[in-house]
Structure formats: structure tokens, C-alpha cells
Image 1: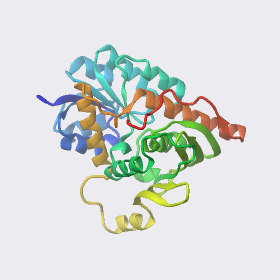
Image 2: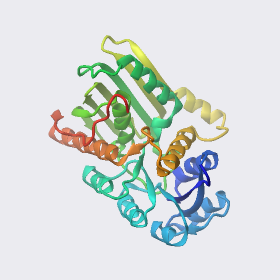
Image 3: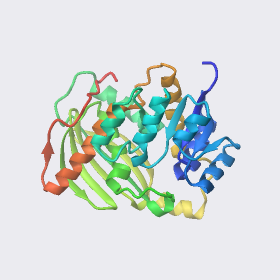
Length: 327
């Protein structure tokens, strides 16, 4: 493949430090070229951990002062559009962390850029979830089944103070919901057509989705011990597959025995970065989240909020793209 793809990392917060830095060291075909962050102390710390790479105050300064082939935007959602727009003007590819935007309208602004950015739905690259999707694809076959063919339960929880984010204070729906909405679409290879039973608070989000190939119950929390669950059942209740991580016992064990080795999210970030590098070079990478995926997910987030406010179920033309069974 020739030389490594040169990456500029924008945002030097917690995700950069414990996620992207070790992932960039481990990923093949990509190399960290420079970092950008408005807060000097965080910027200097990440630059030092990365081996004294050049550091800049923001994405525009990085684009002007360093030669990079791609940007990773690990910044709060409101910064994504201006930074991605600057990269597009410079002809530089972009991978935008989730949530891609604060809502569907702004996500559509990202999708309108040329070149359009990719979206960091990194859980698609978790080995356990990848295996679950393969198994589910075999179970569903290639013919489009009727609604309700499979039932999904997707849960994601963590304690926000334990994560230690510096600036992000999104509610649970915006913080965690995009990952699980995207997984529901990706696992079933279909789009969301309705939202029901929405219940929201700053720390919790619970709602149900109707998709073209099934239904999904989604539960998010930012005030509970780390817990991830993806479970798929057929229409008769038989478990087709399950992926689980964390939980109360794991949290208690982590207090007694400190974690050794990289954070669990690093493996999925490695896979995502390698796919990003190949995609920038022109390869087809269907597992990599695209801008249209970001629009579909954020429009679903908007619909969850509307359903909660209205106190009723909502249906409508939510997606902007439809995933085929072969994708």
C-alpha cells in the first residue's frame, strides 16, 4: 500500500488519550502526523504521549501547518461541521466521531460536503459484534423478511464521572443513542420506520424502534456501571446471538484489580482506522460508517425526542438511505 496515511487528530480529550493514541500506534497503514486542541495543557500532553508530534490550536491551523491525508475529529458535536468544512476545502478526508452532529439537520450539512466525511460508528468493528452480524446474516438470508423478523435488545451504560470527559455534557440520548441506533440498522441491514415508547431524562434514554427487518429495544444510561449488551432473538424468542461486556461484577472486579493493557474500545478503533485508511485510498469499506448513515441515525434521534415530547408513537420517512442485505 506504500507509505502510511498521515492522520491529524483534532481533539485531545479522554477519547484521544486512551482510545485513539493507542489505536493509531497499533493500526496498520495509518500514522499520527499532528494533533490539534484549543486547551494548551491537554494539547501538550497528548502531543508528548504521541512522541512529540507537531501540535496546533485548532483544525484550521493543523491543515495550514502540517501535511496530512486525513483528519479524525474527536471533538464535541458542535465543532464537527466547521472543522469538516475546512478539511473538505483543503481536499482532506475526514472521520467524524459520533455523534456526528447535534441533530439531523446539521448531520445533513456534513453529508453535503465534498468529499463527504465518514462517521465513527466504531462498534461495527468490535470483533464480537462483527461475528454477531455475520451469524445474523446467515440466519436471515438474502430475501427481505416481513417486519418483526428479529427482535434486538441493545443496552449501553457507563458512569460519566468515571470516564472523565473534559467538555462533553450531552444527554444520554445524544451521548449513547447514536451508537445503538446505528447498530440496530447495521445488524438488521435495514432502516428505521417508527419510534415508540420513548422515555428520556438527562441520564437515561429508553425507546423502541421498528425496522424493515425487525424491532429493537434500546436502553442507554450515563449513571450506571459500564455495561454493554447486544442480543438478537428470532420471532419465536430463540436467541440467535449475544454480545456482552462489563456489568456490575466486572465493575467491582475492576476496582480490586486495575485494568492492564489497552481500553476495550481500542480494538474497534484500530479496525475503524485501518478501514478509514483503505477507504481514503479508494477501497470499498462497507463496514465504515458513511455520512448518510449519520443523517439516518440523527434523524432517528430527532424522532425519539419528538415522540417523547408528544407522548405518542411516530412513524414516517426517517431514513435517507437503505442498506441492502448484501452490504
